[in-house]
Amino acid sequence: MTLEELAGEFYAERVSAGLLLDETETLACAVSAGRYYCAYGTIMSLSMNDVLQGSPIPGQSLPEPLDPEPEIVPALPAKNLGFLTGDTEISMGEWAIIKPLFLLYVERDNATRLEASRGLGVDVFGRSVSEVAQEIERMENETIPTKCFRHVVIEV
Image (cartoon, rainbow, N blue to C red; front, side):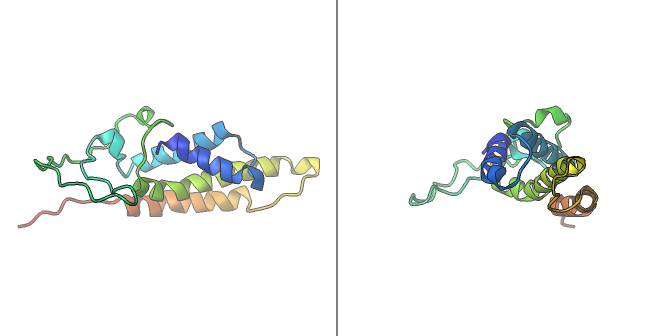
């Protein structure tokens, strides 16, 4: 699925449950989270090194092995963050790492709106911006780099 489809799916689920952001702002949070992920991990659709076969559609048989075996190309980092947009294909594994950061970005932007409306007498719900910012800092500095770490195994 594309990043835009994933963000749209999230928006459709949460719009009636207190989400104050619109679809464009939700997509911007997804793109920001994806771009941060690119600093440590690789997006297979951008690096063009996705040579693994995907699982079959439920109810279908396993795909035949590739013949000849494809050459495994090492993952290269994205040199330009502009390459990652809403149209970028994201795998399930990549989304599993990107989604928690995306959720925090959405929560922070939502909390910012709520705190700004406090002067108008609106009851604020959820965590404060500073609480979410601390969680984002921990996610960006510890969790994402740890989950994205890869190293080529060298035998001596």
